[in-house]
Image (cartoon, rainbow, N blue to C red; front, side, top):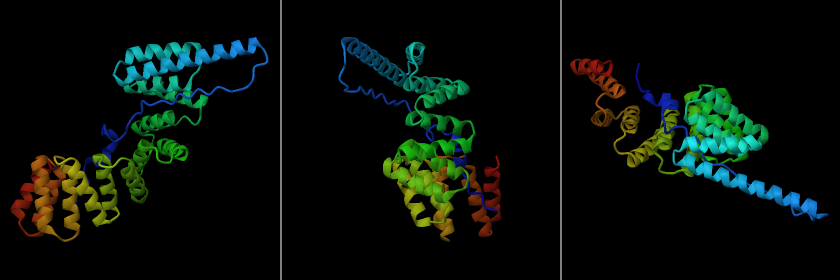
Length: 285
């Protein structure tokens, strides 16, 4: 039995695989209705002033969040929410709580944002990430699908949905989504690598090799795509090329268990049992 699964199947633990958004959408719309009297005009002006003040506070909180000043950002957001319900404030507060590992509280904030605005794309995307990290994959998939219905080319939702389908061995859907993600965010290592892996699992070897070669060009010190290029060569019957690639992967990462294992398999295939034993032992250390 060939061991050809590197750690990519644990992608949810990889920091770059899933992105929590800190973008928010403040869009204050004011009607152009004629005012019947000065009282209506005054009330409208007061409302506009309040909305402008809230928007300013939200921008301040977002800037603080981006700079890593979570405490100050949280104070501003809680102050905003103490006087009025606001979907953007709930979403940003959810991001802060998420970053602090307060998963249940973060989920409540994202859902509060969605109660106020069911089409809040950022809150949906952030909730999807939280659910995926919490291993609630069915819910995460539904959320990311909702994001893509609202915003078909939403980069993070497209990438994360592709990764979720790959984790479920639905490589056809994964490849389609990751190919689109590659168009949206070209020259991104994680996208190219996971796209190559999905294409490899579909036995679309030429396309897989192209994706892995592109991943290597983006990150020359990454062992994973080099290992997979070895797998592509092995599938093509190019044993010498496969051996060279797996050895190159070991230069990049000396304890790469899968590469050692496959070199053991290749050595055994060519009846070099002493070398095979050495590689197997390294693989299982």
